[in-house]
Length: 237
Image (cartoon, rainbow, N blue to C red; front, side, top):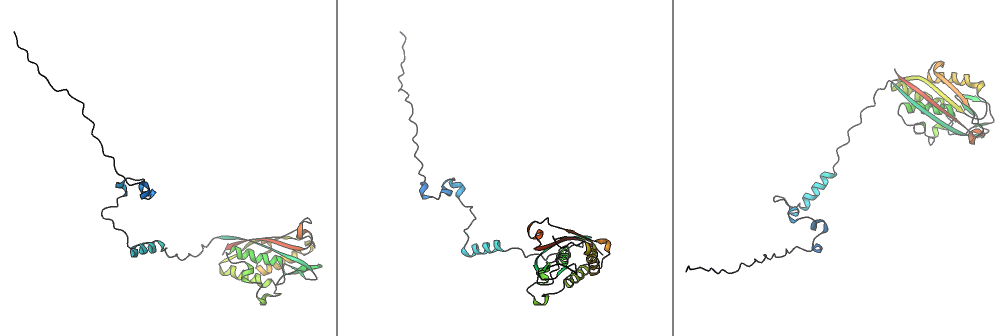
């Protein structure tokens, strides 16, 4: 009879999963919100870094606040030509002389101004000064200066022409427009243009003068004011 061997083995039981201990992280309330949102490895300072001392922090702040010194501005370029525009307006009042372009124009009203109130010569001066990149007539000849009280505007024109020549320019051409309702300037245009040529040292062919009414609109059209526009072209000598 054959013998049989019986091997008894203990049953294999499934192993219990290893229990993981919960990580103890600091609460969000114990850290600033900007720090708690990142892993600790990203919040760790570099090994060789040291916090800035108060003196070092002030030094860094001073270095950041230091601005480079302003470089001296270069002289303006010697342009072959320059263009300037001038504008002026004066109120008309009874009993005052009306002087336009250095010519006394018969009228029952005249310009109220600190000087002689020549609206055309004033805007010619402003056009030349503007082309040269200089301050306007009110800054160079301020009405707060008593020496300009009642002064002839031809003085201002000659000074502007002097500055033009000193800068190395001469007049290329001038185009002026007068705006007034009264009086009519047709009988006086040639006398005005001749005087402008004399003051500017220019040929009559480069001086143009126009006069317009204001169609009875606002103070210009109601004979309560007078205005002028002037454009000049300066040529390099």
